[in-house]
Image (cartoon, rainbow, N blue to C red; front, side, top):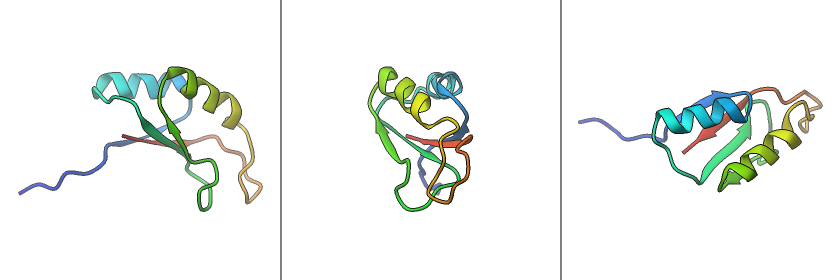
Length: 77
C-alpha cells in the first residue's frame, strides 16, 4: 500500500508557485516558508494570489533569524 504525503515544491517566486499549483491542481490554502529558517520564522498560510504576491514581495531577499538571505522557499499543500 502507498502512503499519502503532503505535496511540496521548492520555489523562488510567485510565478513558479502559481505554475506548481496549476500543474498539480492544488488549491489554496498553502503553506510557504523559507528553506533556511528556524522555528516559525517566515512561515505563512497563503489563502489567495494576493497573499502569495505579498508574501514574496516581503520575503524575497529578506534576512532570516540567522542573518541569511531568504531566496528559496518551500510550498506545501
